[in-house]
Length: 150
Image (cartoon, rainbow, N blue to C red; front, side, top):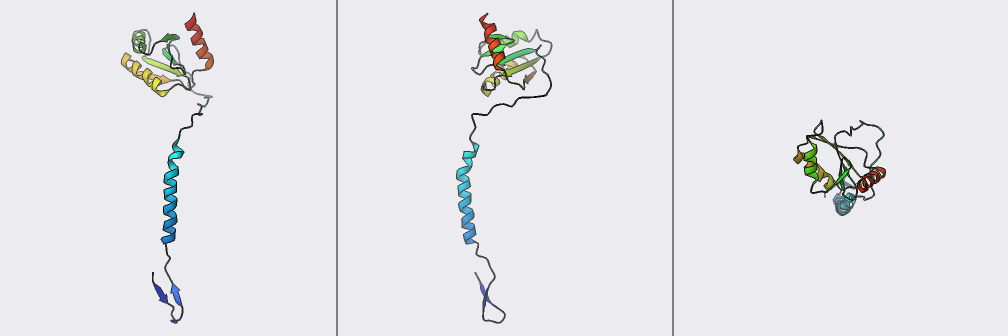
């Protein structure tokens, strides 16, 4: 820090700014933000998927795999065990005109269960997987459960 005398030599002139206190404040703010930032990344468990008002209609004449929130799999309305999902899709591939699987899942279904459907469809030989934009409604889940009971 340098102090210079004025041109008349009597009064000292202060030309430089001391940035040490400013640096200290920024350092403290940086540390606070580093401590608080991870709390912004927590997931909100109450997120619901928005409804879709428009879009391309999905043809359901292909293989349709429905997934409930309880991780129950249905292939074209018939309940299928998780282990036999690939075999069921393999037997269905010869009957469909397009090698395409439509996935209708409940909004609370786990993404790991959807990944199981994707792996099973790929192993069965399906070339395209379409995830329906509208989740499996409670009415559709009830109809699937009633059809299984009959």
